[in-house]
Figure 1: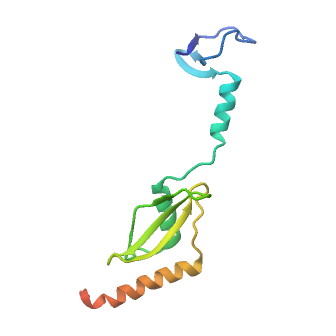
Figure 2 (figure 1 turned 120 degrees about the vertical axis):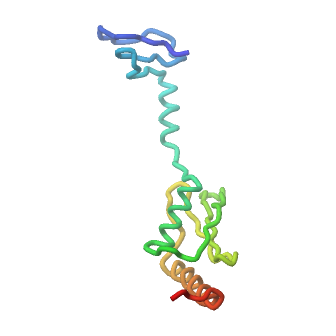
Figure 3 (figure 1 turned 180 degrees about the vertical axis):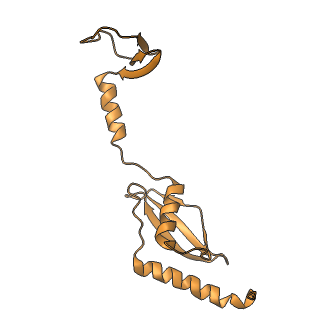
Length: 144
């Protein structure tokens, strides 16, 4: 349980207490600051400096933006991202045609959000989609 100091009305220079728990400073009954031990502060700093990891949903959005860019209504189905704890952890996002065929798996670095997709590979993927959709156009007649 933390200690509470209510309505500090005089300045203080040191708090002489065992800081195994935070000391909470309040103003008008609302917490405004906390005094913690140096070790707790160092632990907090180490936690804040850890590399950020993207969630699966964030990785999927990043990969979609990289692949589709300005396209709307592309004939690809995006699968669930797969976590790959390689030396540099990545999310692998599978893309399938509506026939179920996997067209590509795009990797997104979990620490930086960098997409492993260059312009040439993107063009190849989109060409596969165009080829498949025009091949199957006869199965879905166009409406006038």
